[in-house]
Amino acid sequence: MNSAEEKNINKWLITITVMLPAIMEIVDTSVANVALPHMQGSLNAGTDEVTWVLTSYLVSNAVVLPMTGWLAGIFGRKRFLITCITLFTLASLMCGAAPNLGLLIFFRVLQGAAGGALIPMSQAIMMETFPPYQQGMAMAIFGVGAMFGPIIGPALGGWITDNMNWRWIFYINIPIGIVAVVMATFFIYDPSYIKRARTSIDYWGLMLLTVGLGALQIVLDKGQQDDWFNSGFIVACSIITAVALSALLYVELNHPHPVVNLRLFKNVSFSAGNLIMFAVGFCLYSSIMLIPMFLQTLMGYNATMAGMVLAPGGVATLICMPFVGAIIQRYDGRKVVFVGLIIAAYSMHMMQGFTLEAAYRDFVWPRVVLGVGLAMIFVPLTTVTLATISKEEMGNATGIFSLLRNIGGSVGIAIAATLLARYGQFYQTSLVAHVTPYNPLAQSQIAVLKQAMMGRGLGPVAAEQSALAIIYGKISRQAYMLSYNRIFFIVGIAFVVIIPLLLLLKKPVKHLPPGAVH
Picture 1: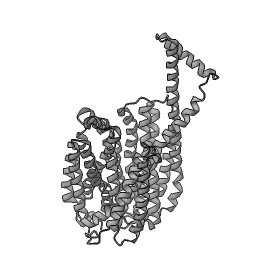
Picture 2: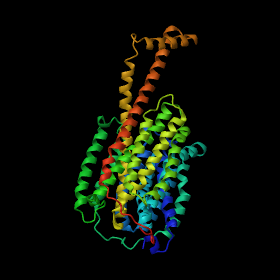
Picture 3: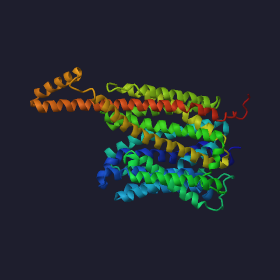
C-alpha cells in the first residue's frame, strides 16, 4: 500500500500541494536577478552591496538543504512543511516592504532558509506518494515544475520590474503561499515511519554545516569579483570552508543522530548519482549563465530577447519530460541518462560554432537540443539515484541530492566567469599582436576607417585614433567570442567525462503496475 492510499488522499492533490511551494521557491531563485539595478537605485546601494541580495539567499538555501530530513524528523514533516511555506511567504512580504538594503538582505536570508527545505521535501513526498512503478512519472512531473523557474523567473521579474515595481517580485508569493498553506493543512500528513524524534540535538553538526556551507557559497559567489585568492576575504572564507567541512565529516560520521546522514554515501549507487548530478549542475548552470551574457554583451540583444532564446529550450524540456517519465517505467533509466549526456554534449558542440554573424535561429536550436538532453538526464538520474534509498532516509537523500546540484551550479558559474575573463585577455593579446605596421590587411582596414572618419569632419590625428578604437572594439568582441567558444567546448567535454560513472549506478528494479504480467 503506498502512502497516498494510507490516508485515502488523491495523489494528484498531494502533487499540486507540494508543487506550488516548490515552483514558488525555484522562481524566486532567479526572479531577483533582473531587478538588481532597480533595487540599487531605490535603496541607494553600490553594485557590490546589492549582489548580496542574491548571495544571501543562496547561502541560507545551501545551509538548510542537507538538513531538511533531520528537521522534518525533529518537528514532524507536515508541521515543518507548513512552517517553511508560512515563513517563506512572510519573508517575501517583508522583502517587498524592506526600507533599506540591510533589512532586505536579512529577510532574503530568512526567505532562503525557509525555501531551502521546500524542494527536497516536495521530492521526498512525491517519491513516496506514487507507487514504485510510477516514480519515474512522479519525477517527470516534478521536473516540469522545476523547469518553470529558469523559464519564467527572469522574464516574470523583468516584466514586473518594468511595468510595476521591483517590490512586486516578492509580493506575488503571498497569494501562492496562502493557497499552499491551506492545501498542505488538508492534504499532507506525517506517515507512520516519521515519528518526531526526541533525540540529542547535534549542535556541533549544525554549527559546522552552517559555517562551512555558508563560507563555501560566499567563496563561489564572490571569488571572481574579488580576484579569488588575491583577496584576503576570499582566502579567509576558503580556510573556514576547509576546516569546517573537514570537522563536519568527522562529527557527522560519529554522531548517533547526525544533522546530515553522510552514511548514505556508503551506498555506491547513491554516491555515483550525486557525483553525476554535481557535474550536470556544473554544466547546466554555467551554460545557462553564459548564453544570455553572450547575447547581451556581444550580440546587442536586450534582456527580453535573450530570454526568448532560452525559453524554447525550457519548453523542449517541458514537452520531453512526461515522455521520458513514461519511457523509464519500461526501460533502464541509466541508458536514458547516457543518451541525454550525449545529446547535451552535442548541443555544446553546436554552441562552440557560434559566431558574431549568427542569427536568432542559430542560437535557439542548440538550446532546444540541450533542453531535450536535460529532460533525458534529470528525470531518470533522480529516479535511479533515489531508488535504492529507504523511505525513512528519503528526506535526507533528497536534501543532499539537491545540495550537490546547487553547489555544482555555483562551481560551474564561478569557473565559467573566471575562464571567460582569463580567456578573453589571452585571445585579446593574441589578436592584438597581429595589428602591426607590418600587417597589410590591418593597415588597409585602418586606412579605410580613417578615411571614413575624416569624411565626417575629423582631423587626421582624431580620425586615426577613432579608427584604432573601432579596430580595438572589433578585436575585443572577437576575443570574447573565442572565449565563449572555448568554454562551451569545455562544458561539452565535461558532459562526456561523467559517462563512465553511469556504470556505478545500480540497475533499477522494474516495478510493474498491479495486475500487469511479464
